[in-house]
Amino acid sequence: MKVTQEKLPASQIGLEIEISPEMSTRAYEKTLAEFTRNANIPGFRKGKVPRKVLIQRFGSSRIKAAAVEELVQNSLKKALEQENIDAIGNFELRSSFEELISQFEPGTTFTFSAVVDIPPQVTLSQYTGLQVQAEEVKYDPDRVDKLLEDYRKRSATLVPVEGRSAQFEDVVTVDFKGRFAPEAGADDEAAEEIPGGSAEDFEIELTEGRFIPGFIDGIIGMNPGEMKDVAVTFPDDYPQQELAGKSAIFAITLKELKEREFPDLDDDFAQEISQFETLAELRESLESRFREEADEKTKQNKHEALLNELVKHIEVELPETLLKREIEYSIAQTAVRLEQQGMDIKKVFTDEVVSVLRQQARPEAIARLQRTLALGEVAEQESIQVEPEALTAKVEEIVENYPDNDVDINRLREVVGEDLLREKILSWLEEHGAVELVPEGSLSKAEPELSPSPDGVIGEENIEDIFVGESVDAAFETVETTVEVIAEPVDEVGEVNEVDEAE
Image 1 (tube, rainbow, N blue to C red):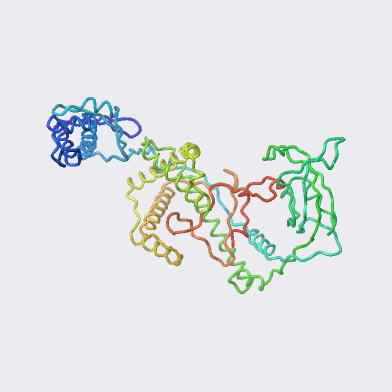
Image 2 (tube, helix red, strand yellow; image 1 turned 120 degrees about the vertical axis):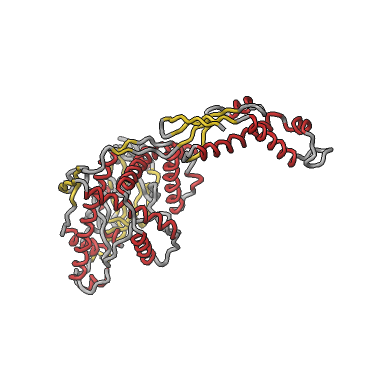
């Protein structure tokens, strides 16, 4: 078997494989023998069908197709072994299968060409002496006070209000019914009701920005039992186009008026929300956690800056097989998250949706592969490895912290090993580079801050596909169905509420 290689772009190799007449004959005879063994033709015993009858029954093209298919598969496998080619993914014929069938004749030389993807060759023009800037995150003492105050608010109890009207920060229970404002001269009673714009016993916190402009202001000053028509105008950029810019009137009945009563910030409060006996101990723990968080975020910023700079110096042609795998993995992860949120994947993931997801996932897949390959090249050049003892210790630590979870140990070791290796490579780049720390916010927009829980426990990083049944964040936004027309559109994620994070 003669094999000729051709280096192609995008980490591909073209192979021209020449099959000898003897091999083509053996392949054809083997295929005929298989047809003979399995053929069930009336008038002939199984395995005793004459060749001529067999060919007439199944057709010469069908038998040739089976012979060519096996010949291509087997010869490609042998060619890769013979040429020591580390192929990834499946091969791709450079001519149609129908053409190969028409060319094939037993006892003659058979030649075909195919393309295979191979692991990409990575070249880094520079990886030592990288010079970058990274934001330094400093500990902010005010965060402790803010977090404790947030907990006071969450621990507050609602008590009825007497002797005054509604004011901001109160919590009210109302009935309301919305209708479009009638045109000049039209009968008010003929005004069309707003679909979904009505509710009974609806509890609202009277804070600005929660609903369309004018709705909250209209409730301010009302007393329990009072009824009032409140005129509002939907913003021009309101997401529901049929409501955008429209004037409306909401008939509101204030049924209950309550205010929050906050607990004292003392040792009893600390004991109620945490494992600590005194407020001083709780403060000390939170300060320590926030300092650790600031240091960790600074470290992440440095490593992210180094990684972004490293990728600028990579030269690599990504094979389509790797890209497709990365894209499909990304889509599969999205599907898992949605399914865990109770969504019907078969209905959500239509062919059109999957096609769009593939297009959207491609740039991210390219970036992830470039980062992974760049880090791998540094590790190979500098012989950076994770010590088995360190890997075992980290795996045992994680398992101890999650005793009630069903753990896939092999997958866990794989993921932890990758994380530890990545950490070692980035630390090496930092040691052999120059990182200038700059004030937080000077390079990018500030991100929402996460907070530790009051009992002093910092959550482990999410390790997907490790724990059976673990909950993950939703990949798609959910749609609120209750009285959605009055809610002012806001970011579903928004600023992370430190109280929510702490629970």
